[in-house]
Image (cartoon, rainbow, N blue to C red):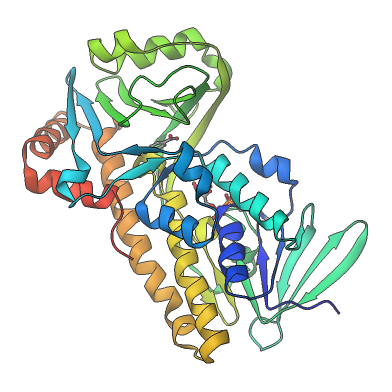
Length: 391
Ligand code: APR
Ligand code: PHB
């Protein structure tokens, strides 16, 4: 029966980054992915990287394109009541910045490095299922090419996202914490220059939330908050551009370059954490264990910090025969997860209009925005969470 040291379920950012870090440390691993590589690359996801994530890509030896094509941001902007307010995150955090680099490109870099190293990735692996992780001989079963397969391993990493099989396998051992938000985000991708290439713009208007972002200097990513029961077909490009302009200040609205959408979709928002993140010799990482509303751009960065903790613990196990890192993985990862969950919930609550908000609560939101942009202490708190708390 084929054997490896670490069986990784899922070839998204978490699985690929873990595989690359383990490979660099000489630890054998196999990734089992149920989709095709093209399907994985076809996903449109946020790409605002904390320095921790950039450093991890460098540690994995795949940071070259990121440093060449990534756009460094020293600030973000909040726009409300028709006025823009820059938050100079670098000055407020002793020089920390974030980098805009699409998740698709990050995934591509990791896929190409894995292929170049000749590492085994089984795409279109069907009915993947983890077994025996309560003992010391876990196996992962799957079907591929019309045949049943079994992969023996020392450890299983469940990097299979929110709808994966890993957490589902231990659902009776998991405590779930969830909050679903009463609105969605309508996102548009367009090959037009971003209106604010060096700072993401977060808007709160009486019409709802908006966000001005980018994938490169020639490809923009915009969002507007929309009702949960809206359908993409309700939103023509013209209606989208008109609505976006109504939600930002007049000068910014006049500067937005519009164009045909190349992707348009509506995504729901949820906060979700599953505890614990370890089950014997199986460990959850990334979206398999937690989900954040995209407002704080923490999803990819949390996947990266989980992978940093887990890869370090596995390397320590094999090199020093120590179980300390593995025994502390879940508590350590969850400490950072919950701080990012809090920040993502807070920024979502601050920047969106909620259907059931009364007049008093709306005034509180207005007051918090004014306090935030005029208080160095409040802006510093926003900035240090946005650039990423220390590992
Ligand atoms: N068997 C094998 N692979 C699976 C299975 C399964 N049963 N279920 C899911 N997968 C694969 C998916 O096809 C996907 O490629 O696992 C991968 C999980 O990747 P992601 O969902 O991208 O999760 P993760 O790697 O943790 O990355 C988190 O992605 O969703 C965004 O906002 C999130 O940016 C964050 C990042
Ligand atoms: C994005 O570019 O998709 C993006 C940027 C910042 C966010 C969320 C999404 O907070």
